[in-house]
Length: 481
Picture 1: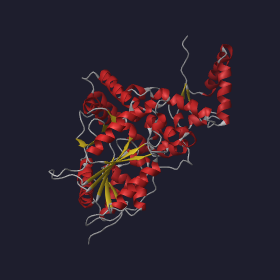
Picture 2: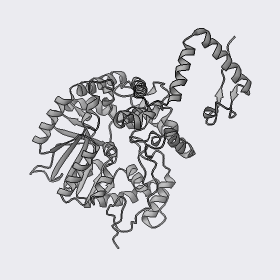
Picture 3: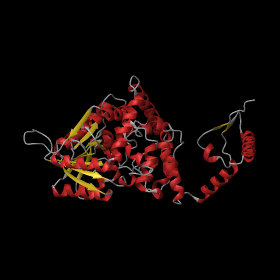
Picture 4: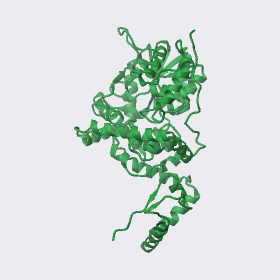
């Protein structure tokens, strides 16, 4: 008997049943960073998995660029992105003109709500009952899936990791690797419930099970929704990179293709990809080049055997244009490779969900307050050690360290810093700006901690230090004589 059940409402082939949706890890802004972080830190597997996977990703990136003039490539990448953003209105105008000449219908969404209304409207107007989606962080930004389901459209995420988090009622935990925080056993349990039988707990078997259902979804969907890694101004094209082929199927098999792309993704020329593509894939997955590079230039022509009948591109602003020409403009240079997450000591401990919105790690600590406002997202700019590791690895040299400091200053200026914190730093600044008080307080602190230490380690839950010693040991360095 054929089952048409819901993984977000998707049509499924014989032998499938809908999984029970589980509570998601994505929290409402009423929770704090500390509360969300504790949830991840309470899961030992998640902490080990995130640290292990990010270590592996950094090793792959280092190996990828070992025999390449990496620093020069990064310089070139920065120049391309800086030039594109500095001239964004002109390049967007050029891209729109060329895209429309190619037969693409272009829309501009000023905010998240408008993006949802435009895409839902296209689906209603074109009688689209089901859509397949390729991985898209922009669609996560605007909460697109729930908007489509609200107008009766079935939605299936087709990236394997995104498919899993959708079925679990979860959210992606990493820009590149959405289920970094999930175990194979959890995926096995989920897929077994969907199959109505106990599947072999082997990666190949689980992948084959997902592939069967996703292939059915590709062949029956009326619409395909993707993001876009770059908008090429000189040709009016959208470039998409994937490793699973789902992006290519999503953009070519259904009769209607819709792409939701941030306005900052525009680049001047196709030849700029010779620099940006190796930087994106090398810093994202350590590959020479990703498995699939798809460049779409409108609906299929009369002589072409396949491709969509219609192509729609929705250009998303949602706070981006407000950054142009300002202190935080360089945040728009980001190419969403996830490298800064991989090296961040905070992200490696707490994972992506602790940041409370779509993006985690250093780039999330920058984009969240910029796009959501200081009142809702300003707290996460504090979630950094300011070690500068993110600056050192960013493929386009975004000065994330400086942007984070700027956001901290902005948070203070807008009155979002708790009064207690303001007073504490005012006292600390007044004391440590005087050499004699600095020497006296450090001597008192060193002596007090020395009384509490055992073999140079303060590990007991000492009043005043519990927030530190609850989660780590405080190691005292012996003074050199």
